[in-house]
Image (cartoon, rainbow, N blue to C red):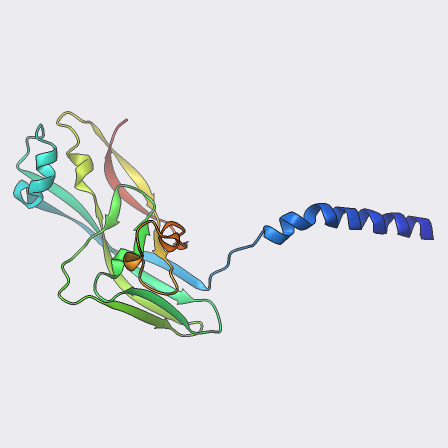
Length: 200
């Protein structure tokens, strides 16, 4: 290769770096050592009298049923630390599901009353994990939308995400704050649940 060729290639590389530099400077590949994995432990259906959902039935007065079936999915949740450093995950001690979300409108976490509930830092050691058991539930409001709706059975893919805030549980963040609006969510592997949904 001649000196002129080397000089030309050098100029070409410099120009290319000059063009790409702005995008390279502001492009970041987000990495979090926190991983989440979920698995189905059990699933079942319970029938409830309409009085159990009294407030909900008031929103749909045209629906004339005495009871409704609700689908539940018990899941195991494993939070793992994919690093050589200790990791702290902030959640509430009782209502820890407040720091989790799902990726579809049909399935949410079931909630339960808490006598004592306070911010807690769950410590996950290097390359370690913290395991929980949670209960996902299919929202019944979609079954009460109208009295003459038709339904179809679908295999619904569902992911669980943990809202990873480094300083406090997400439920304690001020609504509308920068921390609350720019939430960092780590998503799990998908699970598929057979549920009934309204036809379009």
